[in-house]
Amino acid sequence: MPFRVEPDPSLKDALMDADHALSGVWVCSGSPLVAEICAGAGFDWLFIDGEHSPNDLGSILAQLQAVRGYPVVPVVRPPVNDPVIIKQFLDLGVQSLIIPMVNDAQQAANAVAACHYPPLGVRGVGSALARSARWNRIPDYLNRAAETITVMVQIESAEAVENVEEIVATEGLDGVFIGPSDLAASMGVIGQQNHPEVVAGVMKSIAAARAAGKYAGVNAFDAATARKYIEAGAQYVGVGADVALLARSTEALAASYRADASGETPDSY
Image (cartoon, rainbow, N blue to C red):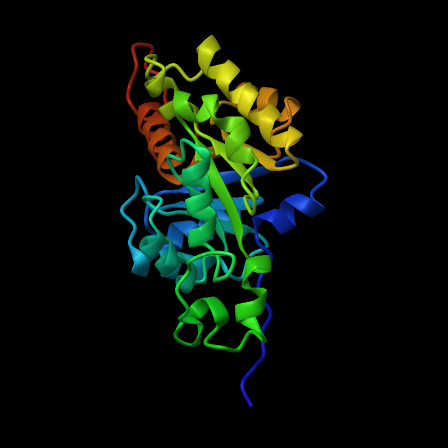
């Protein structure tokens, strides 16, 4: 007899049970090995990025498998709000999705529909062939799939902030994830994530999500900024990225071994 398995908790399950804001790290390297290292670091969630990273279906699958044995929730961002691509991600076994560049309620409704089988949505049925249902080893997966999936959409433009109340009212939407970098760019202050207008947009979006009973998350690699948004009600925060951590740490290590004007030698380990 085959093993019968149960689906893992998704992000909404972790948020529902949390007594603190959940911290997460971006995994942008495309490497299962790096993903596994990050999975064991102690973060609450991992953000496997399919939009700005060298990831495809195969590498995302490998990363999901690599982090499976750790008490961390993998969250995956597809490159676009497209039902065909979202279907493929879901069939890989992705249970928590952050859909990028959602600017209005119709786009939010489209994202939700892409994540659910009829009659709730338009997801194609291929569970017998897919890891999502563990090849039909999860009992009654088709009728239970909606419970196992978390759908978040990204608020990352001035248009999205303007429409945020309508977006968070979307039936079936679990919450939002706010991207200050793209938001700053759309407001004409690219690179200025702490510009007052950007911060105001983030704060408005957090407040709208919480008022609608939806989850609010935000990207904030600066610790002081992250704490400010947590105090404002953010329940999950992206606080760093694997590639950025590696870049800055290797730079610092290399710099520590360069002879400086004082002739100091680097500290030993």
